[in-house]
Image (cartoon, rainbow, N blue to C red; front, side, top):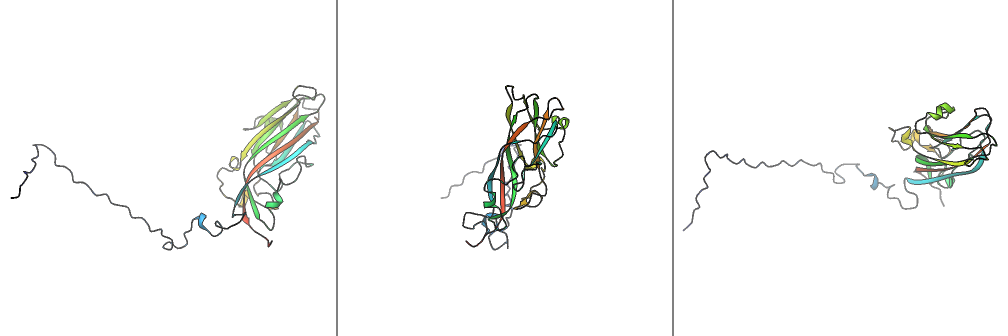
Length: 251
């Protein structure tokens, strides 16, 4: 004989349990290769999978370095300009104070025939060495933060109040601190925070500056405001760059 269990009685006033709702599953688009024509991840393209030492893009830190050279001062105030995001013409000084050349191995990586044709400097670290050999006058030296024009900072008063500026005070050549170094770091977003483009305005072709140059450099000023100081300067500029537009010649 079958046994029947008595039905559970609900207590008076107890609420009836709510039925469990089934969750609706959101439909997913079918992303199987071939169903969505032309949708290819950047890491799966033909160029991305190219075999060899030069991929479709390359990240490199270039080194630009120059020996101590006279600042070429002709008055109490001297301005030395550089192009922080240019690999083609970093030295923008009158008289080529910082060497007027390209960084080490530039020609091996960027040329009309490749392996790359376009560069974009992303960030940099610059160290200036300054030696004051003036016999009488001490000097103030400012290292300018990234700006968008070469003449943006062209006076001692402006340099003294520029956000992000770094400075050093040097005694005359007979003092206990007649030489020193200043290190500044920068990124292209310091000046163009909204720009994400690789080529174009912030990118330079192998034989040109970028269209939008980001400037830096030094301002040297005699403490008495009248004497022309004798100062020597050197630079070490490390530029982290992205190279693109790969090309080649038959070996």
